Amino acid sequence: MTPYLAVALTSLVAYFIAVKRLGWRPTDLGRALGRMAESLGTGVIFAVVNVLAAAGLVLGLRMLTNRFFSLYSLDDLVWLAVSMLQGWAWGLWRDSKAAPLR
Image (tube, rainbow, N blue to C red):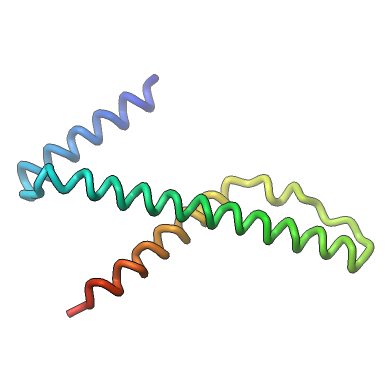
């Protein structure tokens, strides 16, 4: 229960800092959460594709070389973290097309 309470507390503090000190509009939070959900969804798609591609590579190496390559390397949280970063970068790249840099 403690991690959930800590996350709720820091989220609440961040909300008040954003609204009171930074002048952000509370109504924009919904759009930001929607964009976050898009990035998470894209990250999940990248995770599935990354693991399937790696599994295909491992199975292909097994067939081509007649040596054993383990699928255990696919059982790592790094795949998920890197895939989430890929999804985030993809979303930022997509959004950069709409808003050119000065």
